[in-house]
Amino acid sequence: MYRYNFKRRILYLLIGILVFIIFFTIGTFVTFDESTSQLLKEQIQNKIKNIDSMGIFLNNFLISILMFVPGIGIAFGLFSGFSTGNIFVIITRDLPIQIPPLLVFLTLFGIMELVSYGIAISRSYLLLTSILKRTNIRENLIYTGIEIGIVAIILFFGAIIEWDLIKQSGRLDLAE
Image 1: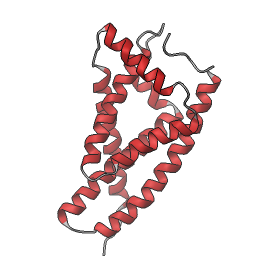
Image 2 (image 1 turned 90 degrees about the horizontal axis):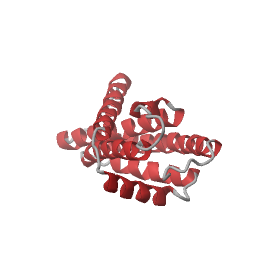
Image 3 (image 1 turned 45 degrees about the horizontal axis):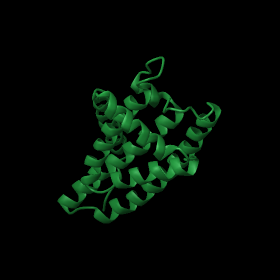
Image 4 (image 1 turned 180 degrees about the vertical axis):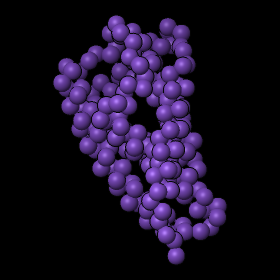
């Protein structure tokens, strides 16, 4: 019988958050030439032009679901962190003041997304080890379902908070 170890689970969660932050930070150090940066910025703007809280939720939830896939989810989570760092730099590049990249994770919705992605990345690892060891697979699938539900709830409320912040800021036009 499998015994759930809450302290170990928190440790894996923290490691998942840490690796996401590390790859996000690495992504912020990548530089693009002016034309590539402008092209990417326009593509990002077109993608988010008509987004609302439900669009933010769906985007973040679909990303997190991929992070739950055993093994592959870890790689996807690291890539997601890296590319999010790239996007952050591209969007904030021409602002009058430079915003420290990690500042985004001090917002309530940023913390909520970090926790969600940390849950997903760490569960991907736990599922992978369970499959490789051929132990506790059924119990891990049950915990995975519970954690997917938790992530959905966290990301839903995070999207509402993020959308409210965007509305209050007057829908900043990041393409200018």
